[in-house]
Image (cartoon, rainbow, N blue to C red; front, side, top):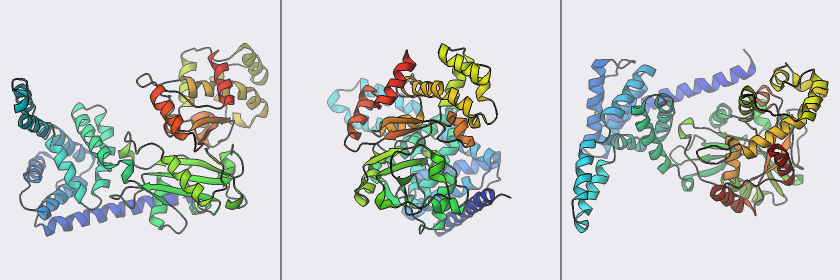
Length: 475
C-alpha cells in the first residue's frame, strides 16, 4: 500500500466514524422526544414505504413543541441514513412526488385572484404564496435545527444532483433544495479562517480529501503547504463550523510564478515571507459537491488578498497560477470536427519535428512533453489555441467564457495576465491542458471595475500579451 493510499484511507475511515457518530446523536435526540421508529430495511421495500409516509406526515403535522419537532426530524434523518443507494432513491422519490405543491389548490387561488377586485386580493395572494411552497421544503427546513443538519442537506443535494439528471420528479426536489441552501449560504454568513499546522488534524484531513487541483500526497506534503512561506485560508459557514466550503492555498514568492512543480517541491528551500513581493494563489478548491451552482458571492479572492496585505504590506502582486480544465476536451472536439487549427508555418514546423502535423497523433505520444524538439514546435500553436479557447469560446446560454476556472476569476475581478508553457506536467496537468497554466492577476484597485465590466458587458480584462495572442488566433 502506497503512502498516499494509506493517507487517504485513514481520512475515509474517519469520515465513516463521523457518520456513525451522527446516527447516534440523532438517535439520542429522537429518544429524548420519545420517538423511535423501527429501522427500515436498507432497500426500503414496499412495507417500509408506508411507514416512511407516516413519518413524513408526522413531521408536517407539527404536533407538540420544538423538542418534539426536532425529535421527529432526527428520526426521519436516521431513517434516511440507514438506507442503501436503492432505498435512498425510493425515499427521495416519495418526498418529491407526494409532498409537492397541490396544483389544484394553486389553480383555484390563481383564478380567484383574476376575478377579485385589486383591494380585496391580499388574503388570496397570501394563500397563493403559501400554496406555492411545497410541503417538502418545510420538511427539509426542519433539519436546520439538528446537529450537522445543514451538512446533511448539503450531502443530500449531492446525491440528488446525480439522480435528478434523468428524473424530472427528482429534479424538482433538487431545485427546491438548491434554492433553500442558496438562501442560507449568502456571502455575509461566511467566515474566513486561516489554516496552519496547528489546526486540528481532523480538519487538515478534510482539506487533503477535498483538494481538487493538486492532490496532497502525504503528511509531509501537507506540512509543506503550511510552512511559514505559505498561507492557507478557508471559508466556513456557522452551521458547518468544521466543514470548509472553499479553501485557497498561497505561496509567498518573488515575481510571478510560472511552474507549479517548483511551488510544490518538498525539497525547495524555505522562503522568507518578509522578503516576498508576490502572493501566488496556486490552488482553489470547492469542498462541497452539494453546493455546486450556488454562488458564495463575488470578491472571495479579494477578501483573502486584503487579509494578506494587512499582514504583509510589502506584497505588491496578487495572482494565481491556475489550471485550464476545459482546454483539452475543447481542442479534441475541434480536431474531431475537422477544424483547421494550424497555420501553414505551424504545420511545416511540426512536420519537421514530428514527421506529421496531426495534433491528435502528436499529443497522444507517450511522454511527448519530454522531447525538447517536439515541445518547441508545439509551444507556439498550442499557446495560441489556448488563448483562443480562453477568450473567444463562450457558453451559448450566457455569453460568459467557456472555461469554468476562467469564469470564476473573471467574476471575481481578475484579469488574464500570462500563459505558462508546461507549468504542470503532472498526469492531471497534461490531461487537462497539455501542461499549460495561466496567471490571473488581481490588482486590488481594479477588481471591482473588472468584475462589473465582465458581468454587465462580458468584457474580459486581459494583458497586452494575451490580447496579441488572441488577435492572432482570431485572424
